Image (cartoon, rainbow over all chains, first blue to last red):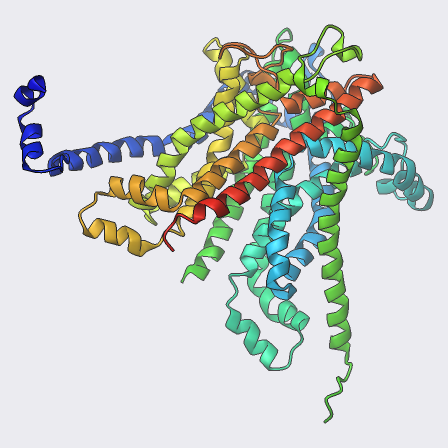
Length: 332
Length: 288
């Protein structure tokens, strides 16, 4: 007590006046100023992280970019790191195949589901559907992989592939020489389910930016609901739906574990949806541990990550800008 | 004109599309049901108490005794540490975006960069994290895994928080500012309390993402049969346990992978449902 009263004049003063001992106004404002600076620097984290990731990957990829021309890396089809042959084409085409099949399977049901939830469903259906879709989005990719392995791969191997191979086998796209079921189609189906909740929620959000009055005016003229959707709502939101699908595609491009588990991982340029594929993320995940002893292997795998990153960044930025424009319109 | 509906082509089209939509909707939900059913029906028979209470004994991966306690605890440590770190960085960012930057250009720029970060796949975070760890001479460890998970969770968390904080009633903020509160006080004492339920669900969302992610911890956290006791130990994680057990050729071990997948799914479901329950619970205390 004694110590306190001698050393802290201000403190004792405010105590003697009453029960309140608040910090004085200038110190609160100092706090505010200091906090503003600290907050500002913390807020730089995302930008530093983004730039840091790009720079780190470029530096680590540099040795291989110096030694081989870009064209040879991207279009080469032979992958033999021990002999110094780094052709990424099988992996690039594998990634594109799996993503494309996934998107083709996912898009129609997703668009219809989003339209249903936004235009037709009652409020109660929406309140039930939202947490269920969130749940679908929350399931970890490894669990999707387990599902694909247990349910989808045998289904394709035992039923879909023999059936389609028998009737449509003359088309190269459906010819089945791979009896296992570990295939592009399996990867595509698993990816389609994984990105569905994501695409649905974006399209739903985009649809809800169309003003209610536009729909009501059309319905009042005697149009059916589908006519309204088809003729009035959809034309307004086509770019947004496109952006949503592209964002879904970027998710699919980078998905690692689930695809790694069901796509077969054979280094080849696939021609049929029943062929095995070896996408870029699977390449990185499978080989990163053991690349130390082989020269340039490490740079090659980092190059795979960089390639993935560049494609995803481009798609992402474009579709985000489109979506920002659309969603802003609804704010006023 | 009677009240009877004249069936025209457009009514037929309407009916067809209505059913197509309904079928799509049911199809999406059926996929969710199918996944959950697969995991439960495959995992339940081989889920035993020993599996979740023991660490792997010798020869576990050949079908001998043991459990996956190392992976369960490892995953919880990783995800909790990562989430904690992400909250420490993410909450100030969300508050700064909301109370200081609002809709300024700088704020827009930060938001776009967060959106872009959110789109970067976890394998790229993993590769980036590991190459930085190599550069500074760090080995695969719990700490490495936690840092990379925090970076992965950061954009998910901040975006969710930012969306929640936009619901903040402006009157409440203005009232506080009008009686002389500084912006910092508004952010910490008013916004955080009012929006607690939303902030908690954002944190749990990021936690769920973190605990289920495999590709980012594959190189950075490593894998071990022991429960980590310090930050420099390597740590096992559930997704990787599932993956490794599935890649063995022994059916007994694969059965355990299904059981591990069930454990992971239950954790994720519990977090997802728990966050819903908590947000209802906590929103009682906010001013409407």
